Length: 329
Image (cartoon, rainbow, N blue to C red; front, side, top):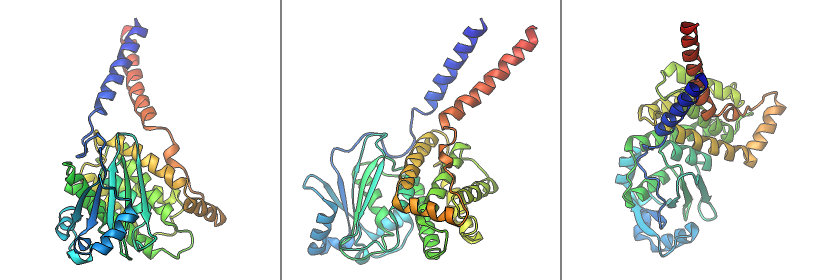
């Protein structure tokens, strides 16, 4: 009888747990797009030569849906002020089926993206809920790249899938903060953008694992832990750490790490961290960290989310069984 009760209870727990993760709440849908979307910066709307060059860089096809990102889109999605004539970075994006993952490539053969790194774009896209897509960014001349995210969001809007503006603004805050921290530590021994982006991704995943409803002090503890685990404890200053805490807390307030979003976010973060770990930049940073007596830990390879969930419910079940055993002894 006890075995039957235990099996039934575990089955019920399994069913309830699956139900909790079966309905994603991201604004974007799970269906893949039949065509890609190319979004040119507004400055290219009247400059056909620049648009032609950018089209080649992006690999835009005749079947692509084409639109433009204007200054008002930067205000809408990123809470940034700009003017159309300076918007020159462009994006081609195709949303893939759920579970395909996020790939991003920046073609800098004609124009450099001078401020935003590939990893930083990915981190911010994940924050905004874009987890399964192919993204390519390019510009015909040097640009800072800060407006490029707005093109991604405009692409989703063109496909009838507007993204939550609170989440996109949280993503922009994150992108800007990480970029500034990277610039401030660019030539500092023991620092790399790969370490920083990995630490941020792991911190966000941990917030999601703990329910996405943490206090600022709890988030601060998590951020400090991940910074230390990635060899940045003596590299980042308090102001930079506070910037990370603030944008993670802001993202939390937008519901990014809470409830049904949590598992999807954690899975995406894990894949993203694995990409960072396999990059040449991270491998070099890891070797340098060892040379100065530090060790970058692989914290996302600890006990998996599913194992933690089942362990949690198993502990509840054991407590219930022990309770009834004590009654019927």
